[in-house]
Image (cartoon, rainbow, N blue to C red; front, side):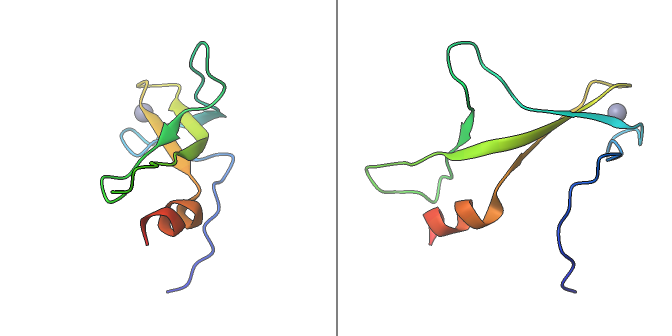
Length: 76
Ligand SMILES: [Zn+2]
């Protein structure tokens, strides 16, 4: 299957299937949160920016999304 990945605006919560709110993860003092894979073994561990987040308005579950192509380019 080659399904184009799209994050829908009405993304259902994987825990309780309630509609999720869309936003960004924000940390005081830093504009972006990054992800660093354990496969990144070099001295310079460049972060992959977490560009999107979803929060469940029912149970509080938070999902984070980064750019998978960007992460793969850092691992390989
Ligand atoms: Zn939920």
